[in-house]
Length: 278
Ligand SMILES: [Zn+2]
Image (cartoon, rainbow, N blue to C red; front, top):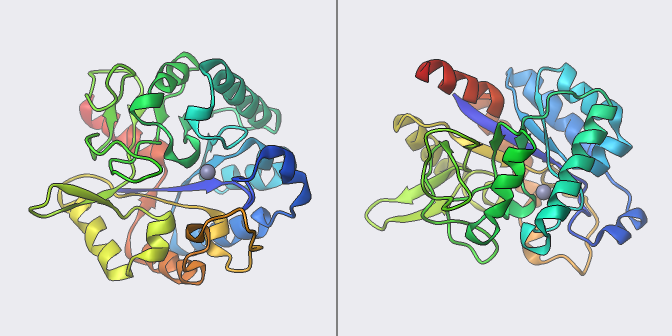
């Protein structure tokens, strides 16, 4: 069983929040494309929803839930965790969960930090998530990149703690890391799990890397942003090249991925682990 995740956010969410009102979002059309593909291929996914989307498009979020998918939280302002204090993260989480509850989504068990920003310097966030009663986090990318990553973190789901986020614990919050490919002989992890890497890498390599995860007895954990499937999103000077790199190639590869692999929600995957462990 593999896990598919969608970070439900408008294309402009990496601009400061006070500029969001100037932009026209395309998130409804983009998510509808994903829902149709999931339904055609009989797959399920976890949708981590940014508060802005739950607030502006409650019908869309209820439709995600009604079609059998899981709804989790992607926070409020889409700022990197290092730009927040623990109190600010508490506020962001409470606001996002309250908005989801307000539109009828009661069970919010999972969290995805903006920009995969849970790393060694922001591991205090794990305590906030535990206090707020989350069952799992899915924000650790076991890679070294200029923007994020904990290269020495486990590459499979584990129980995470704030003291050292790379040491698996016996119980507590689940961490579901994004999939990586371990380069044979080099001891280096390469990200393959979706998003930019889905756009940038050849499909054959991605499929090979995901099959290697399955062969090792671990799920492939893949993600996509709705705006990545939409080559016509506005080009703005504030965004770097990697926001737009090969946007036109993502939809075709995403469709192939859904045809070649079976995906479920993060929650159902964890249920299967808990059932196995008794
Ligand atoms: Zn995001």
